[in-house]
Image 1 (cartoon, rainbow, N blue to C red):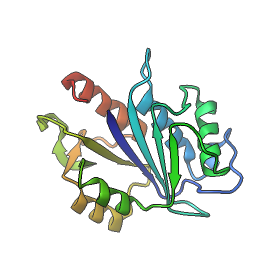
Image 2 (cartoon, one colour):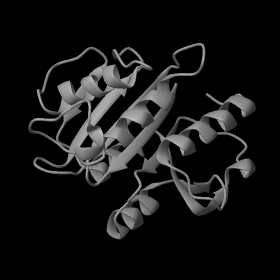
Image 3 (cartoon, rainbow, N blue to C red):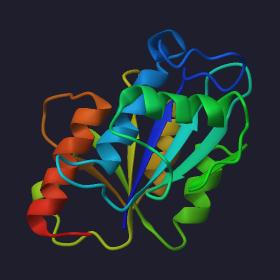
Length: 187
């Protein structure tokens, strides 16, 4: 099962959130689109786990874990509603978990059993990878990781990998990564 992580320093972590305008909610729209890309292809739902680290106001950091069994949908409004229910209403939802945890705490624990890959255009070309055992791929939103966090994640990660010199949106990067993993038949 593929495992992905998305970091946002502005995505809201509580309060009244409008699922129809996630752009105005600290760019939760980026998180929504990333979730949709992680789970859906044109004809099926993928098995995956998505870790969302939200660092916006009023209650950061928030770690959302969303699995394939969650009621995520290719419908943007339904997936937005799922996010709103998790973040603002603190509902228990099948296939989802929410906790107060920083990205560094999570990756430090995860690195004991998983191979952590940080995506960055200065990294090693993804084409050079021969295998990707038990991997977690780390992405950030349009603002990227704060410098301090980037350095700490670089230290924790097994390798920094690149999709090329071009900078892409998080969901586009995920689509390219999924294509690469599918082509190489990596799980």
